Amino acid sequence: MTNDSPNPALINQCVHCGFCLPTCPTYVLWGEEMDSPRGRIYLMKAGVEGRTSIDANYVQHFDACLGCVSCVTACPSGVQYGPLIEQTRAEIERKYDRPALDRLFRTALLSVIPYPRRMRLALLPLLLFGGVMRRLTGRPGDSSLQPAQADQLGSSGVGPRRIGDTLFNRLRAAITLSPPVTWRGLFATTPARTPATGAERMSVAVLTGCVQRISFAGVNEATVRVLAAEGCTVAAPPAQGCCGALALHAGYSGQARELARHNIEVFEASGVDRIVVNAAGCGSAMKEYGHLFADDPQWAARAAAFSAKVRDISELLSELGEPRAARQPIQARVVYHDACHLAHGQGIRAQPRALLQAIPGVELVTPAEMDICCGSAGIYNLVQPEPAAQLGARKARNIAALSPDLIATGNPGCTLQIAAAARNFGYNWPIFHPIQLIDASIRGVDPRRDN
View 1 (spheres, helix red, strand yellow):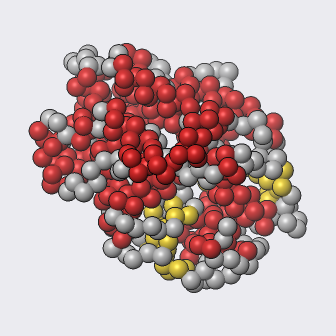
View 2: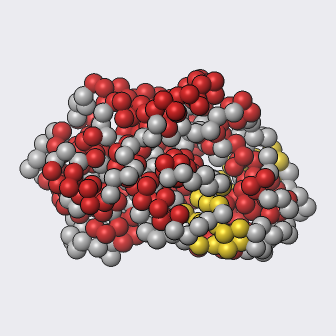
View 3: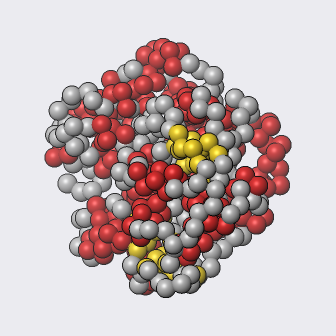
């Protein structure tokens, strides 16, 4: 048994109680047992025991899973579904021969997104012709589809997950959901070292990320400013690369390990107290490095030591204790969206809320169905655009019901997904990472007008 095969011991922890069903996005959409965590675990068990083969029918149920791990939060038996879905997907990628276009599209995504230089080249056409391309492609999926209609499609055997497999829908989603692109963002860099303001409380290193560093450079800038203001000396090792989260969650475990090994080496050399992450999916993956390398005697201890240092930015600020930098008012009704890999993957809910509520003038509210994924889920909204669009629409409706002034969420994928869903309904909500609102409060500016 290896880390790239479903672990029978983890599978057998499931008692098939059904508490996971109402928290699973695909079960909520389609009402199909095999598109629930319980059903997928049953399939995993059948696969391990040789009672079923890894064919197209088997694979589609795992492709349909968002990997949001909301089921882990709901499970009274403590079933670790996250490692199970990653192991199953790794086994699928080893043993299943995907149709040529599907294989090509997935390979292209994972050959570009985790590599900033390639991403810059891929995003250049959007910088030059993005407006025209988005107008031509329209929205990524039929977001107006109601849940009842989705249930009917799912039970008929031609549900949204099958429709979403078409190459045209995937290419359209890639354009519609593409991140904002500016010349400044394409070539933004984070200073290799930023000194603490006043006496140093802690030395930290920040992960600058892939999409984050190119399309959300402002989040990295805000992260460094806030950490420095709160007494941290901040390193941003220039040699760092992708954390491997997208590859890990998609079943490309070999690529994930290669990327992880590089970053372990780079951040070890920085000699810092903590490694700070401002993207939920990245932080979740980095905290799993110990598991990823559990079977590798050369890397297991190093990976575990690395993971022990990883903190989400909200987690780190809470760890520091009483803020040093005074907060100025921001008068705004703020909807906080829980990114799945922050709330479910890392168990971090209270810290970002407490930090936002500490800003004078902020009225913090949470939408209905807070535990249902927005549909982003790594590359899910690109490879399964139809169900992703339905979930995005569902999230946008719940947010709209609260009449927000702005949105806060701790993951770049959620930002892109919610923004695209909002546009379909005619909303243009400003969406920020919580650290950007904290930074704006410290600097005494309105984030909506801060350039």
